[in-house]
Amino acid sequence: MKGVRSILLLVSVLLCFSLNSTSAKRYMMSIHAASFFSMQRPHLGKMKVSFFKVGQGDATLITLPNGQTVLIDGGPYEAGEVLIQKLLEKGINHLDVIVGTHPDMDHIGGLIPIIEQMPVALVLDSGKTYSSLTYHTYRNHIKKRGIPFVRVKQGQYLPLDPHVSIQVLNNGKSKDENNESSIVLKVRYGKADFLLMGDADIRTENKIVKRYDVHADVLKVGHHGSYTSTGEAFLKRVNPQFAILSYGSKNPYGHPHQSVVKRLKRHGVMMYGTNKRTVEIETDGEHIKMWSNAPLPLLK
Image (cartoon, rainbow, N blue to C red):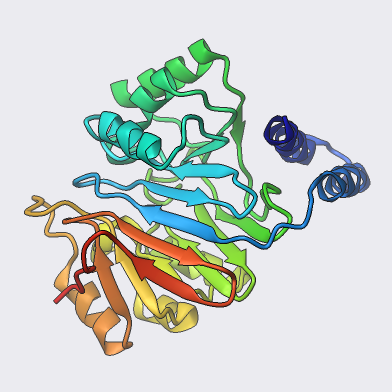
């Protein structure tokens, strides 16, 4: 029941951004924030982040300290059934929030079977529409299941756990290319910072570094390590300890691009790929632990 109240509150907080009056927005935000924090008990557990092996695509699960679950993208369509099984193996039989970063098939395709088969409380979207069959199927299934569908706005915070800050650093506009419209999320738990870039390109990187603190301990590299992302200036500002590259083995796009791999190496970043297995991270807000059923491969 507490999870349902949290989701309803999140929806109302996001919708209050559509109010015309700035003072009304501030008032509504203060009311909702107060009620959110009052209904939560202090919980200093661990936050877990799973970067799933989904082939050439992207799918990330955040399990917050209070137990709320956030799935960011779902890889291509064929990854959906695999993800459902992986979620069930983790004891997850419903999702509190799904985030579709942008309408490309390799990000939202796998969400379609998940939305069909699992209870989902809320879907957050970049606001970028697309004419593809995958995107229309995705939207139709959300509507058919009666799941609240909310377009996020840049600068918004997602109040899912009082101990975790989740901020939207970029969202989509109709005029943007799909990749440029990617939702970018900065997640902070204690001293541990995660920056999740979707397929954001260098133009988007240049925009967000001017507006936000992008430093992160863990960087989910944009666009599968394509040469169009992870520019030198951006990487200096992020200054990550770990980089996660989500890509499929022997993919036809040459991901990750060697220029990006070399750049990350030059900055002393430890790189992990999802081409062979899911990358798991756990943090108590003080320390970050990388773990898996097998030793994690460092990219060469």
